[in-house]
Image (cartoon, rainbow, N blue to C red; front, side, top):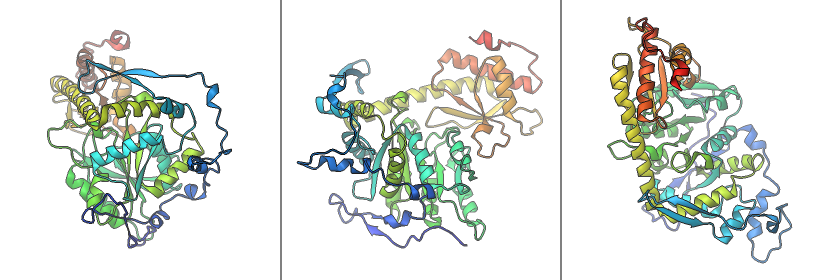
Length: 471
């Protein structure tokens, strides 16, 4: 089969003094990514100012480079805050930005991120994924992981390209591809996450002479919208297919720390690729939104240096950098907690969402048995369920039921069609269980039941509170 993808034969040794010969990994050379970069990324020039920022740290150098405002004009003189103890939420700890960290937090900073925070995140990736410096990867901080995903798509995808997307897929990425007029090739998913067999069928049957997709987008833990988590066997086969067919895995993993299944957590693609003949086919996106604060807007990407350079080039010409002050605040918190404290906190967060899931599922069993079908999520904050809208077993369409009937009954959810790249009909619904209290969950699911009964012609108008009654 003809393919525009680059050869995988050229491999370079990773150099890292902390990695013993038995642990050494091979990485793909920078030249491997030349054919992956979009025309946009290839044409973008490095910022003439920001590209020289690192030189300002040269000892003895007097810099007249950047138009940074003079810090003596800033009104902020100190910043202190309180945070919950990760091991005892009833206790608070007092934290203060030290003089240097506050000074740096108030000023323009490096495009890739605040160095102390980057160093902490490097340690986190080694702690959680076994990845060490010197393996040909690095980290960039973004204004949320979606900021970084958008820039990655722009850096890797040309208008009209075919892209691989798991389906159903996070609705937030569909516009990224559709505005580039991409052919979004849907890879099937089920209760075990992305179906590697579907991916293999697509790639092995790819038309001769047509360029194969360069990227696969997937959310492997607590997928938004399905709530499903990809099994270990599926992950390994997807990695094998990435090697065989030369594509980059965009591993969007905002729910990694919201895993609450009984079995040990599966390794990430970023971790598993160390078992491959070479590393460099995974571009991973993490988010602090779900575990620290959605409003801080901090995510980080980990992956091949050349791809991170392309993302940083986009940042340098758009928002310049992620807020220095926000990064300084988050670093102060994480540094005080340490990795053990961060784990204790995220374990508690995962436990919180497990309880929320159980409450929601009890209501579903009570009110939707016989009217819906679902699999129980083991991560994240969503239930994905199929409404049985017809008594004769024919596939229904949830859109009108959810947007009109259910809303009029006083409950708001999302119809499944918005998560399908090509917008076809769907009987599925996504419901978020992260915020509603137990009583509201009970009422909401009961209202969904009445909406389904209305659609099936079995409702008889009973108990219709309406939107006003729901307030």
